[in-house]
Length: 338
Image (tube, rainbow, N blue to C red; front, side):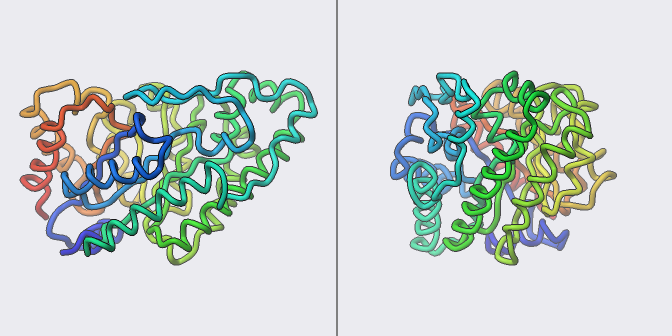
């Protein structure tokens, strides 16, 4: 089977030769230069012969064009961070305006996608490529920080809603431009869909409404869409998993091996394709590669096989030894046959 056929089969719960595999570390030493980023990411994909590519733009790409000051390190596992308070006066809310996603930092991420897609076509290897996007509430959280955002939701909710509507418009425009380039779908990351931050009523008002508007920008070209349910706590009851599995995406990714629900539990909650099985916190860079074989075998067993792709629960640390990546890749061949 081709890689696209294999991934499409997993999405549709159809028969395939084996379970698809995708792995995604950041490339922080080079992710401020999209030419170098695309080259490094293609080498990583090609060396491991992965079945799909989740693009790895740097985490603050969605906020830099608003003019916020960002501190960048360009070192492994040293992620950029917002370096100053963004909303200091009521007038500062006006800085959150519609953006032209073909320019600035957003435009660079389109070039990154274009270069990865061109690399696939040039080598005659059309592995699906999906771009990373963030929920509008996650983008506003990245811009302001949680304390300021939480306070604003109480004291000036109308300003928060205007900002979220603007961010949603920009995110939807980015979706449409990526589809024009030929991506297969999106990795929709939600970092505040957790009861640690808010209850269902608050997420109704400030989260899901805008999330669904982003999904409305996707069309039939977007056949491989993943909802990533991020968690900051190992307590499974804090995750809004049951809520987000209802989003209009066909795949779900979350921290199944250290947060929950488990793959077998999730299979009872949704009929969508599950992506996971690898504990990115404990495994890959913290165990002997022999142990990874059993880890992968367990993941395949827990998932039930069909409707499953092997991957991490979130970003893989960049100090992961190359032999551990190869161990996971070979284990997928050994235990992933269907």
